[in-house]
Length: 281
Ligand SMILES: Nc1ncnc2c1ncn2[C@@H]1O[C@H](COP(=O)(O)OP(=O)(O)OP(=O)(O)O)[C@@H](O)[C@H]1O
Ligand SMILES: [Mg+2]
Image 1 (cartoon, rainbow, N blue to C red):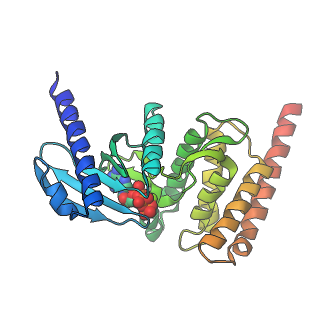
Image 2: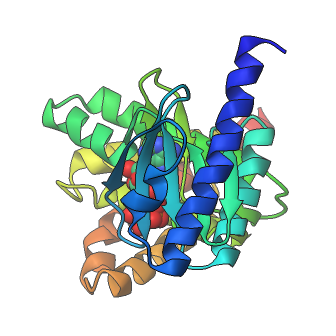
Image 3: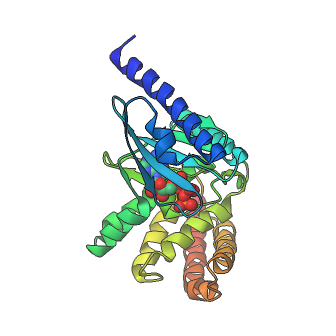
């Protein structure tokens, strides 16, 4: 066995032990530091920011850091693990789950920033080109996910789609995380949710927001091998806006985005016209 295989086997074993210790801590009400502290080579445990549950960075000597997440229930942990394995197996950027135990999921901890943080940084420096490039890459990754088992706009969907659920690693690779709510469903609404997050990323609804959203939509449809579909893209965006206005208690959102919806329809119609002319030439 090569050294690399030995390390990965060791990591897999430790991830399994970490998942079991974490599940035990939750079940028995043991302090997480205490439960994890008994793992071989324990170096440290840091709780990470999470709005829905508990997430940790676990450092163990001899293997790279691990990400440990406690989900709402076992079904969500299983769901996230199985869909992540599916995507990773297809070569789509997504960290492979190393262990699942009850509500606990363990994967590699990536030295990464979220796409939301990267976008903040680019916009702070006025680097619109980098910001648009990042939106393009996120949309391409979404197109890759949507192409899995897809038929007529129905197929794999992320559902909990926001810019914090895309990680940009230090080697610039892009990964999707947080597939607890993912499943199969309406893809235009999933794409619409991405558009809403781009358009409302602060400062929201500016010309730069529109440029980033355009860049995302163009690359999504180019990657998915489709023409801009006005009905599909704008209906998905309108649905996602209605959802976001309720979830964020911001009834003004659909009104604020109406100029972008009109702009989208105009662009889509122009593209369709161009393609018809092309077909006639
Ligand atoms: N593999 C990883 N490596 C490094 N950081 C990660 C990893 N997975 C997640 N994170 C960080 O932890 C945060 C929470 O992860 P995740 O979204 O999977 O959990 P969550 O409980 O659903 O959180 P939230 O409710 O905030 O979305 C991410 O936004 C990201 O900053
Ligand atoms: Mg998340």
